[in-house]
Image (cartoon, rainbow, N blue to C red):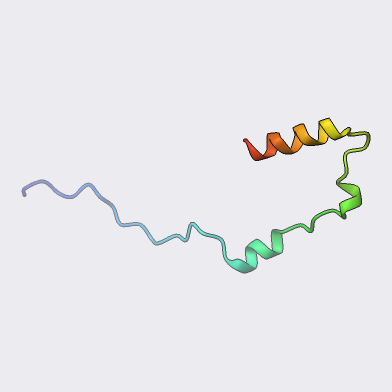
Length: 55
């Protein structure tokens, strides 16, 4: 009990963002027609979605 505390008090800092901050930084999704992978075969499409499901 003769040793002084080594912990220093720090001001509270919020580590989470506010809802307004998150909404302000959000970007809208592209239209569906812009997210299509041109020339993808049915097998390629199936493999793509399987990879997404099993990551």
